[in-house]
Amino acid sequence: MFQVLVSTHEPMENAIVDLVEALRERLAIIHDEQSRRDPERHLARLQAVSEKIDRLQAALPHPVDAQLAHYLKRHSYDKALEFLENN
Image 1 (cartoon, rainbow, N blue to C red):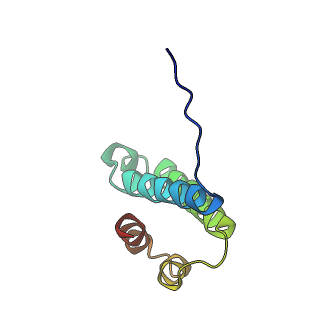
Image 2 (image 1 turned 180 degrees about the vertical axis):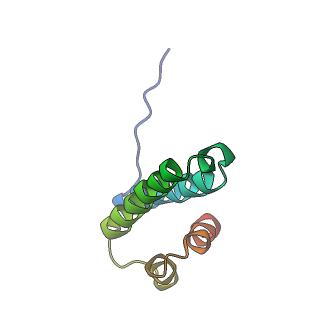
């Protein structure tokens, strides 16, 4: 028997989940040694994920936690990810 799973996340939770995924994707790109062998492609990947993070940040429902907003505004993405994973 198959069970259909329906997301019961609220919009804020979905936005946070998407943001966490994008922040993790950014870290993966940064640590991807093979990607760094092609600097032009590597920078393009970083730019694309950074633009994605910016879009997701803009889509966060308000009010956004002040500490998270601070990290995102300053592009302190590692701190933003740590904050989201621990809260």
